[in-house]
Image 1: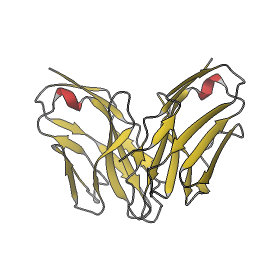
Image 2: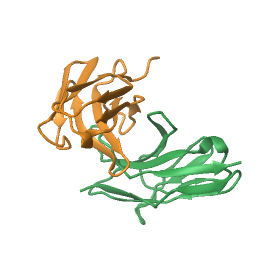
Image 3: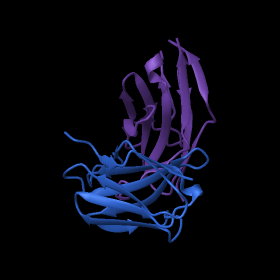
Image 4: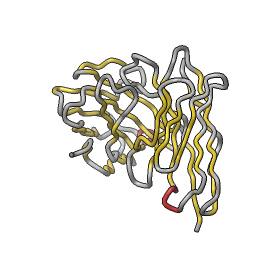
Length: 113
Length: 114
């Protein structure tokens, strides 16, 4: 079945540091890929998405590129802020799967001033 | 625009009691999802509906759990009887069919079963 694997956390960075959060996936078809973010005490929000190979999703300074050859969708940001402290989830949705998402376990990012 | 609305935000109950969680999806969305989040297991999909019809309930842990969607603007998740291991944050999410994977989540219902 489909699955998403995220790197182990938590991750702690200083403000303005470079961020990479790894995500790899296993899917039988041609999935769409997503990053969701969960701020403390809130529900998940869509951060960015990519629907086909080599697409790059971007939002709020975050980027991720859909790499079919390595089945990866790593999240990057060049300069993190304290306000980026949150839990980040990688997810996939198979084409035609009625938006059913398979999530990774999430990783907690803490950014210190 | 109102987002997905869940109630209650917090519930503390004793083992054996019935718990009912409620969700109002975004107007016009025709898919609704119930997720459970725990530290140990992360996010788990319990059940989802399309056009008020349950499509996949394979994630429902056992018969103590049931979910209904009597109309397009309301859904419930019921646990009867509740157990301490049911303690978790339960999220409802909705989406518009044809917009793959873009789920809108409520703020969650934090359940504590003593």
